[in-house]
Image (cartoon, rainbow, N blue to C red; front, side, top):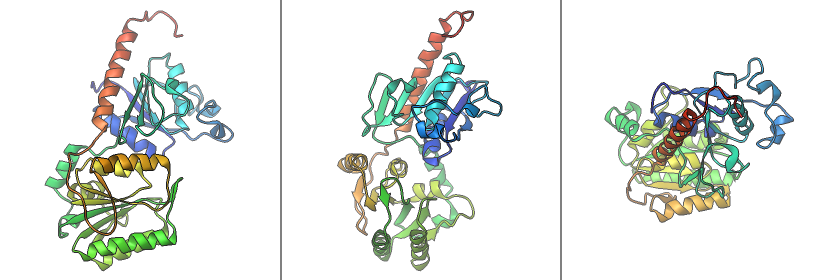
Length: 332
């Protein structure tokens, strides 16, 4: 894709929304501007159906949606839906709009929509895949293996990446869950596996403390936030990956490695989570974590290039259509 094209990534700043958008933009060879909205109440209460916050209208002073408008806008998150519509109108329809995940307002919310296959939204402009887009490219994994993080390369094999999430809309880590997860990881470490652990901002303090103690007690690695983020190297060097079920994105990123994925499910759950994991279990990618290594390597699963190719094709059609419009005519 031409680097002369301008692009925005538009979210409210949540990593779970922003990172997939960046993954698609980067797969297109673009370096997008990051624009973030922060609508106030009561406008935030009405989203995604309501209007954009007046202070964030494209014409408002200091608005994150101020022109010049991009050729391509990639957005995600319910607070970004009204903002995406506002940019589309203000650009006279010239901006090609992409929305990742179900906007909840129907397929007309954007020119192109990607949604996970477990969501119900369908339409001629909707693409669904089993995993979500992300920034974990095959070439980046290869580079991380060629020049491995020294903190991890020294660990004995098998190396097991542990991607710990935390409390979410549908999952909660109870004290029993923390104990069960810790015991299962301890059992795995006692078999000789080296644990390479990273936590998230959502990880409860009790779980974080237990993970730190596990790494210290079994000669593993826990990233405490100091030094370079080892996340890519964790994935690249892993012989297996333990992931908590509260994050679709982490499971999707792990699937791009080809390493067996062992999923720990805390309390709670949701039908969408069950459908998502069951599909990957059927494909031999995901296995239930019970404190031991199971599963074989598989062909890495990465939906990002497929999504990016569909966006590129749609944008090309959109730009060809614009060339047929008389530039002297006012926008609709």
